[in-house]
Image (cartoon, rainbow, N blue to C red; front, side, top):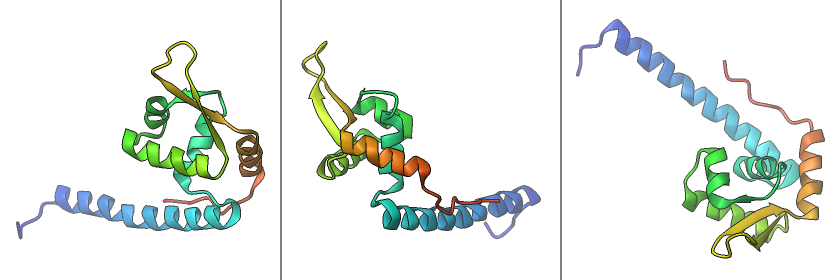
Length: 121
């Protein structure tokens, strides 16, 4: 374990870049929360729903997160009045989510907001 090769050092250098990336993403999310009251995942969920109603599994896939995580995000968005929950008319066992009128307004705000976007170099 004490011996490293050039490949190992290169890997560690790249891995350590993640620290900077995470720090920049954290700063961005802090600004997003302060400005619009949304986490990054909440904002990304609104963006995903812009194209129309989706099931939770489709939202989870779009964001690359677990079903349990998207359920918590959807719950938070529902509490904020940004997302509507409806029974799928084609298959009553399924639930679909869409933007509420307030969600559409918040998404428009998000699209026109100037926030310090992370620069991860």
